[in-house]
Structures are given as C-alpha cells and as structure tokens.
Image (cartoon, rainbow, N blue to C red):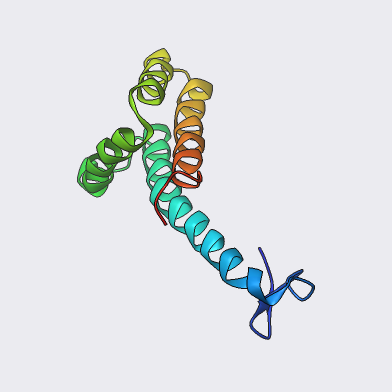
Length: 114
C-alpha cells in the first residue's frame, strides 16, 4: 500500500511538478484496470474453489467476464479456457491470474485510451 502524505505519495516529493499530472493519470489508469479485472477474476476464481457460493451471487460477475474476455482478445481467452478445462486447482488459479495479467497489460498499455 502506498502512503499518501500532504497530497503526495511517498517518493513524489522529488518528482518535477509537470510530471505529477502524468503520474496521477497513470495511477488512475492502473487502479481502474485493477478494479475492472482484479475484482471479477478474484470473485469467480474463489467461487470455483468454494462450491457453497450461490450461482445467483456471481451471476453479474459471469456477465462481466464475457466483457473482459472481449477486451483481452481471442488468444488470451483461449488460453484461459484451456487452463480452466484442465480442472485442477493450480490450472484454475493460473487461468484467472493470467486473465488478470492480460487485462492489466491491455488496459495499461500506451495504446489504450486514457
């Protein structure tokens, strides 16, 4: 966790003032991507390991997963499904972790819209 002190984050005191807006924009981009991919993949992965999770509780996350797969593209989606189909706990975890990383890479890349 990054500590905020007097409107700055640790390490930003020595950053030139004209770079602070860029750093802020990058931080927001990363935070949005993390929220978008991290929370959904976490909830769905957890639900596969804990069968007592009610399908109704994760229904919206499954819908959102389809949107996330569209964002990462067909190659990443295929890798995700191949790992899930293995059915082992390590493969399931890796499937969701890799999807998260792919999503972060796509949404935090220079070509993504800010």
